[in-house]
Image 1: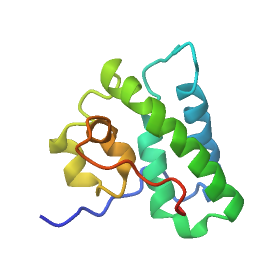
Image 2: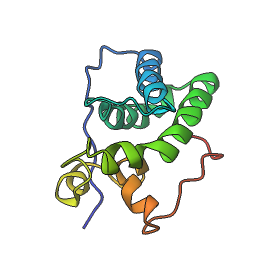
Image 3: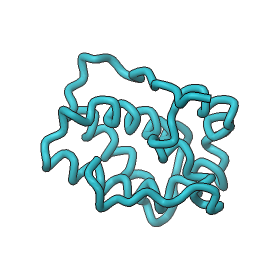
Length: 126
């Protein structure tokens, strides 16, 4: 089965800088050491996919910021989405496999966590 082509989540009216800032805000909340999490942070998945779709617009500084936040997602998203059950339905293959290729690894953090998929190399460019 061919990999899907994801659609943009938010309006094309957002600049890439705005998308990165929104993603960074969600990641800052995910990085909360007290894990005071609320429903709705799962939107980081969609914003990160929008960034990936538009990655050719990233400056080197924005790309570095995305990678810093990707590290937070890699470390913390599984716990938020799976263990705290805020990602119900989003991590089901019947949903994500129709919409997001595996190159959008943030949609597959559960499989990465279980060792079914390799960890992304965050030293590589976005």
